Image: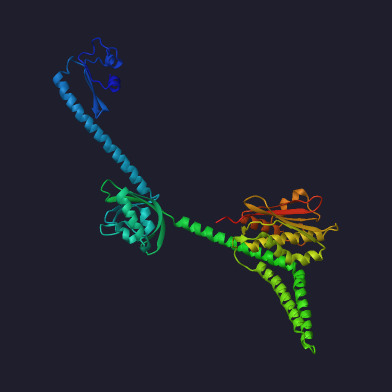
Length: 463
């Protein structure tokens, strides 16, 4: 009977359930020998709230029309009361959940009013800003107490957003604590109800995250410093290897200057001074001086200690400047230089000194590899080419003894070296530099003998 009323939402009134009808064989009716039965649905605004079931096991026809009318009135009131009770229960459950959230102190939570007062807050928030529950008296803690001067303009915009939309999405800011220090937080706000004169804020303390970020930045700064120092040491070591050849490159224009100076003195000291010849000799002295200064300038540029500066670099000119410094070393080792530098290459994006360091290392390694071999000819090939619309390729190939094919990738492992006195850091540093530029550096065999080193450098982006 109850299930029928729930399903159909129709009332059932049985004058005598023992008489034969559709419910006569209901197990409950047979077991309890029910006589008069009334079952009414409790409905409010079309929603079934419950069911009112009454029975009398002694007399039939107990539920007369007048009694049914009264019961139906009571049933409608009962439906309202039951719905209100359910609403109260739901509200209490919701409040209990909110209270558990507040008391759990997982995040800071506080409630504010339109006057800017903080009228309630949990321990997580109070500990965050260094206050106590006693500070939440009516004339106590306010939003202004927590606000730093640089946040006033932002707070005005946030207040306007609360008035218009009732919500301020989560954002990062700083609060002033009770002792005057600052605490970084992530905060989101929402107003209560239509009047929006009270609201809640959820606050997450970002102190640990900011500390971790600062430590990560400091660690990265130290790593970069160490990388700069290592690269600088590598450049100085490379220049040291070339010291004899560089001295020869500087001595040549110096010796020529002395010869030209003596010649000029003779022309000027003659009985009939030849000013034209003296002027030509002095011009040659100036040219020789500039040549020596150019070599020294390139050395100073390579060994200076400065952070990388990513600018537009003309790769062919960069290679030619390194060749000037290494020409003496190649001549000493009987190496013939063959260049094939493509014309009209666009600028690459990079640090010129670092790119010269890579080229210098590759040239020195190639020259030393060929010097250790009796094979002829000793040829060093340097070439450039535009691989695609995004990068330039630089190739350095030698005709030295080469390596087993399985060892080429190991060349870029730190401390791996094929030289008796090598540290195994030059090529790993070179790869680090090229990868930091957004390029790649790799090695392969140069058949029938020798090795090929190639690297790419991205082009300077168009403005």
